[in-house]
Image (cartoon, rainbow, N blue to C red; front, side):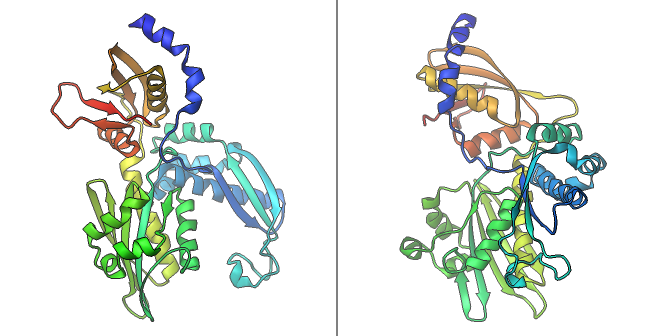
Length: 361
């Protein structure tokens, strides 16, 4: 066993470059802000605000900002800033409605681009016992029907660019890979605004197949009173279904709340908080390893999961690998991550040791 593994490990570096993970969100540690000047004083305040956004994006929970240790991290935000740069704000000089942050007293002339150091920030958050949500995140397809003065319509980027931009901007703020449907001829043949309004799961599931998303979020939004907009959302993640009702005075604010709820719901399932008693062990088998490339990709995949602290191979025999991994969270979270990634398909038959099949990519 030991000789075989050591021999194979010498070939890993030649193969790992071809390893692919599922949904990877880019730019989780990048933030932009509009500022009136390039002074150090202005930058110091903006950096703290930007880091607070990164913390929420990384932990998946806005309540992380209430933690005393996290507040100390944000107070020393500059130590986590790895680089920054300025660019001209192209909206300066346009009508103020095009730039909601523009003020008459201090026009926001510049765009401040900031990047925070991933490793040091994750280490600090981990030491503060905060959940960590890696960059492998479930993709969510958003079906949204809105009832306006001219009737009901399905939101998509082509016909509703302003609403679509709000949704995409808020999804980016929370680090969510969210998409809206095309509502092209194929969609129109499979689903109607009435299906979405009624939140008919069978019709929605059938229409969602072409988008191959990990989750679907279906909502209906309408003006409940003269002062309030109301939203009812249904989030489907595999066999799990979550529902919520939200209200706000403004439609934009309601969409912000909706993306916050989506992020918090997904983080509850996938963000990992390290156990104070140390990592737990999980033992399992993997069948279907047919080549050194399969072996290399599987090891790189497991080792790259945020929830996994270490990987140990216990047995390797005729295409079957037996692993023991140390995980930072609960076993249920580890299994949720495996189901999300879909690289390992669980054998539903009752087994003494949980068994998975390697899905070749």
